[in-house]
Image (cartoon, rainbow, N blue to C red; front, side, top):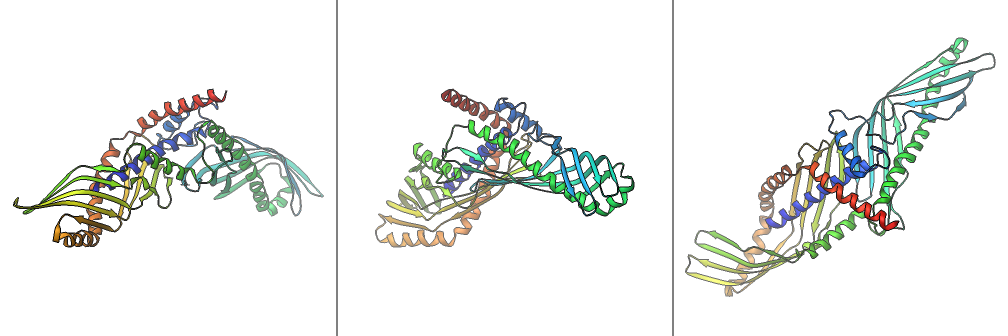
Length: 437
């Protein structure tokens, strides 16, 4: 069964590599890299170059307004009323990506980013019954952490659309400076904590609104250009697997012909010919498929399986070349599970790495014909022994497969792969635009 596991594992790796390239293209399309109407290829290349830096900050011409204008705010505290005008927030575009965690089955993604500091600048007026002061003010937020959750949904038209982005912002420390407080200084010291909390809580909704307007809006503009539609009855991920099953059949890989096999053990020679296997087109998703980014490294993990695999073959056994028997055999494997996890640095000049590979074989059964009185003995050996040795077989296969897959990854240039897909995607988008016009 080594060839089955190898084929499925390599299929997973190739699919994840293509998905990684697609994710990079989608991430770039969501950013206004060199201009909103710039070709997709220019946006992708800008993002690729960005993550080749040792400490990438922000995103190339990201659609995050900096500075951000905040409307006038007014609030009555316990002993005074304060008005804040000409408020601007600086520094939100200087974020550092910490993680991206996606659930492709649920079409949901969470993003965590840090901002070393946010500056809030503006003018204030503070009025009480007996006094009044006004002047410039500044608020410095340090160790800011931003966590956002976004989802894609399939609309009735079959198009994907980004939903509202949920955002949460926290900070480690806050420092404030209000000029010209005068006699109101002692009053301000009594409400200083309330002022900081009010400013922070009031500004958060405006940042969220701008992100939804710019980031979500740009994502939807780019997604609308993509011509493919999806049924709303199943997720796009499961639709992709359904397409993969059709592709396996179209390429006549199910049933699949296995090359002849010859095995010698002492005086015994075993020949297997005309080996056919059916069931590869039953591949399906077992569990979730994730694409996560941690510390500028992308991890793509998938768990796929087949339903029961059925096979037939001709066999011949000879003993010392003197006694031989021949016949046919049919066999089945209840399932084959393949779990693979591949990592790829966002710096595409670096090589991908196979992080984990796990294989599981289901129950193996066989029925042999042509051995005469040896039929039942042969079936006993074929049916019982593999089940006893299944774990040993899998362990023996995993290490060679890991080496084989890593060799394939070492030969894969992700930068070249991205460049290969850019013209195809741009041509597809251009064709769709002409048709719509």
